[in-house]
Length: 157
Image (cartoon, helix red, strand yellow):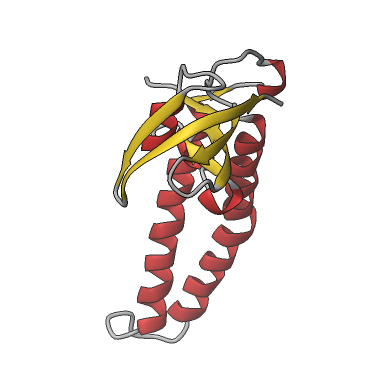
């Protein structure tokens, strides 16, 4: 069984979603199914079919969350250090073409959010950065084309 690396914050986020889906969403959907059943003929009851579909999607997500939480390998970023880039590092880069500065934290797939500066360990940028150090230049081939970045800072915690 393959472990899913994530930070403590990512684990807590998944736990919160699981709790919300099991303690709030599941009872709400069951109530909606009961109300729709009370309307009679189920074969032509759109409310019933919509509620059953919601139930199926919710139960699927619950199973997915339980699986990820069960396989989670929580990595305490605050205990990491060093000059090379690895999981949990916050890396400051400069695009060598535009001189634009970017800052990314390398996290697990389940907690990645580019808008928040959190990139997945399996993303092209993260894969190019792993093992590199301050001053190194990395070439990243992404869907938008190739970019060269210089690593100007690496921090943990």
